[in-house]
Image (cartoon, rainbow, N blue to C red):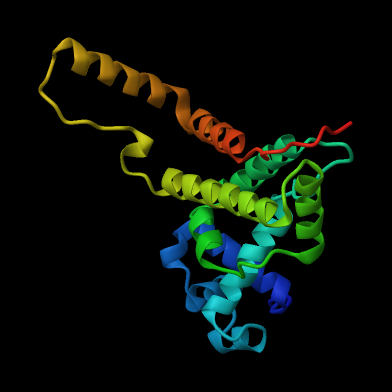
Amino acid sequence: MPYPPRTDRAAIIAAAIVVLDERGLDGVSLRAIATHLGIRQPALYHHFASKADLLDSVADEILSQRHADRLPHDGEQWDAFVTRNARSMRQAMLSIRDGARLIASSGSRSPRLDTAIAQVSLLEDAGFTAAEAVLALIAVSRYTIGSAIEQQTARDGGNIVIATSRSDDEASHFLESIRDVVAMGPDHEFETGLAALIRGLAPVNPIEQT
């Protein structure tokens, strides 16, 4: 005798993640999720008021389970933590189809309080003001999300296509540099931009950390 399908919040969120990975964000619907679970669509409304409400929970679940490096380590330098945190967030988004678009469009802009306090405190200890610390973390988060969105949605597989009939030395040199960049791959491209951003965000009056 088959067991009845699970219809608790956790099962619905897990099903939504499967549907997202199979169909992409534009293909996610309450009907598709209900079909995956083997239940009728109205049963979902016992747990979620709307599709947007469910997607908010899906975004939170993905970050909770796959974005592990949210807290600084004891004695960690601010730039090492911000780099590690950005890499973790990026990998969480890239681990699922359209994950970056989901994170960008769903959920609250407000972080978890305890996590935010720990992050901002680390940067304050390094010489940031509280406002500078918040703005720095927002800037890195937005760069990370934007980079992941572009990687997941780019046409031509992320290749840089330049249509030209020029074959002079300047054009050839430039096109060769573009080929070099493409060959380095999206991870290298992300790391280069992240490093430059963090250098630019360094506090004006840094405090030596021991």
